[in-house]
Length: 354
Image (cartoon, rainbow, N blue to C red; front, side, top):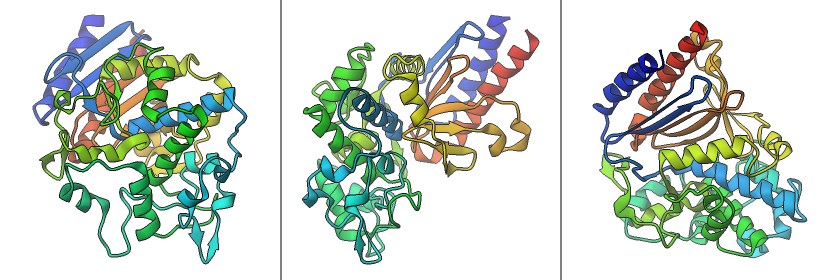
């Protein structure tokens, strides 16, 4: 019976592998006592996991709240320099920088615009500069300046939701201030080393990072894995990782081995619609399949992170079943969800037989 399930999953995955430049998956399903891994390239293939990294940044903030004199209502101006925040939170003539809290940044409700996907005042977008400056190392400060000089706040703190990579760059700088070390070292010290995530690093920051080891990463038809401009992701999602390392993280995270159960509950404040069928908490996303399509009623709710390149890291926290996928192509997001749904369906049907 176990073998039959693995064969079904294998046939499905290989069907999708034929349609994309790269595919890596790991499905660890303790509820059925099965584990399935696949890579179209090599075992433990490293890849850029995009915004999956936001879960890590948020986790480090909640860990700091457990251990330090800071909480979700702490005003960010008490941690970061005024000069860094000037002009980011001006809305309808009023500067709200003194009102912005850590919670606002984590939940994308601070009002700050988004350098990565938002339009600049001249109508251009960051991706135009990304492709024009592929060999440029973008610092968080430079990217925050892009928002300051080319965009406007979209609302006062707590009033509107806007997914903001600028906000998560600020989160990364807050983490550096709280932990008193560079962001890549905080990740290494508090997550990677304790969990033995030996194949994970912060792209273009960690000494162990090597872009040549990455799987293809397709943006607008171009393979950008060697672009130094990917340094832009930083704390917004700059992790080079593997499906196995992300599986380790998900297991430890949902077993409360990194942060406490009460801290995890704070991250589960899924108050904002991220996309159809998905809800955003504090750095954490929940998929509600029945909201995607009514015929998916009864499917488990999965929690975790999602990257624009079809990078998935999900866990059913009731069973600790985990689903990690990388398609490495912005245009393959829909395909990546189709694969996820079909795998979850196979698992669900098998459980119904038992």
